[in-house]
Image (tube, rainbow, N blue to C red):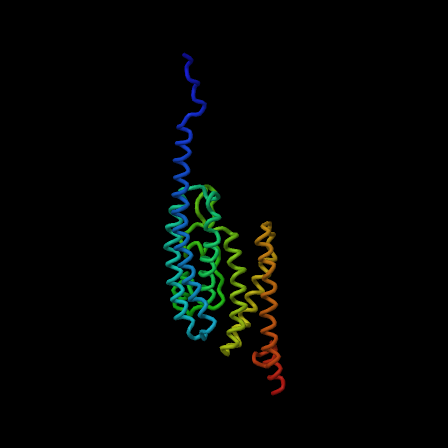
Length: 256
């Protein structure tokens, strides 16, 4: 009687593959749960920030303190995400959370622009009033979220320059809208602050040699927000609602 043909495939190969697939599924499920929690926390912070469009500037401190608390909730979740994600190759999974991180960074940057997260470099600065129009650096954002921003020696979770830059583009859109609504609230000086800020930001983007197509296209859109705010300032100037540069000198000369 002829012997049966030998098995062509070792069943243990597929058993090993099944184990690896199960492991990757668990990793993705864990990451998805953390990202969903982060998205909910970001939505809470964004909801609070949206109130600024109907809030007089005198009440910014109360609103900003609420946003700071919401951002700290984001930071707690991001810390968990850091712990899980850093156990695995960064560029294998980073596309799953990069959009959520961009939005989280955006809430921190916007909050700081409104006077949140004041610099604590000295006691005098700590006791000074909150500063409107301050831009957080990439490193300061990393400090708020307790996440590294520049990894050269290991493939681990970090905040990327691309996420930071895209958050700045989103900020210009938020500030452009705020310039319009601040006029509705009778604050005619805030558009001037916003105009100077977005102009400087656009000038900064122009200094960058952007290779990433997405960032280059998004950064190019900042000029439209600059134009929109300039139109608001121009209209306020025509209506005599803001003092034109040099107007004070002219009045003094007339008095003499």
